Image 1 (cartoon, one colour):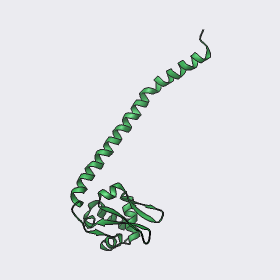
Image 2 (tube, rainbow, N blue to C red):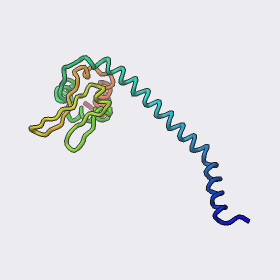
Image 3 (cartoon, rainbow, N blue to C red):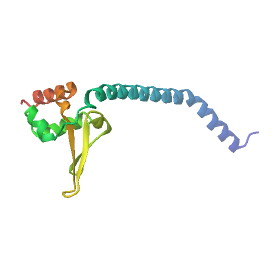
Image 4 (cartoon, rainbow, N blue to C red):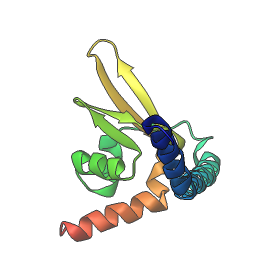
Length: 141
C-alpha cells in the first residue's frame, strides 16, 4: 500500500512526462524564432554597414526632416516605428539597430541634452523612404 506522499510524487513525475513533449516543442520553436531573428539582424547589419560606414557627414533630425519636407517630430515618430530610436523622458535615444543604420548619439554637457545625428546617406535608405511615403499617404500630406 502506497502512502499519500508517494502517490503525490508519482503524480508529479507522471504529469511532467506528459507535458515534456509540449515543453520541448515550445523551446525548439523559441530557439528557431530567435535564430531567424539573429540571422535577419546580421543580414541587415552587414547590408547597412557597407552603405553607411565610410560617411562622416552627420545630419540633425531637423536637416533630414527638411530634406523630406516633413516635420522633425513626424520624422522622429517614423524612426521610432522603424525601431531605430526611442523616446526616453524628453530625449530621443538611438537603438542598436539605429546605430547600425547610421545614428550617432550625442550629449551636450552645457544643456544636458541628449540627441542623435544621422549619417547623411540615411536620406537614401529605401526602408525610411517607404515609411515616409506611407506616413504621407495615411496622413494626407
